Image (cartoon, rainbow, N blue to C red; front, side):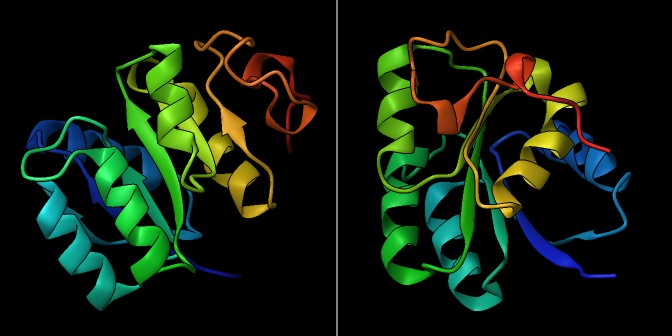
Length: 151
């Protein structure tokens, strides 16, 4: 069984614990670190080189978009999946513009986080069903509600 390493980045400790609990449902996912602000996320990602970075938008010191931009240069092998409560179409587009592979709304995380992770590890983009299809009209980033369920 293949294992994927994950860095969880969010400024709320209780939310990071909730995310860890969801990730424990998949034995292929191993949380190797957490960060509570943007600069800490950049430092930890450079050391840990995780396969996946779950990244919030609203972070102290550097926001998620700035962190994502730096990660693309410093840790290009890490895939980024935004996990945010913000559903503003322009902000979602900006978040995805630097190579992030997915965007999951926090409100949908319980049912869409694990499918989203599997989707991006298959090389596809993932967009939470709570985000309008107008945000990403291409077929390669179809919202979760339009995808066939995976086994």
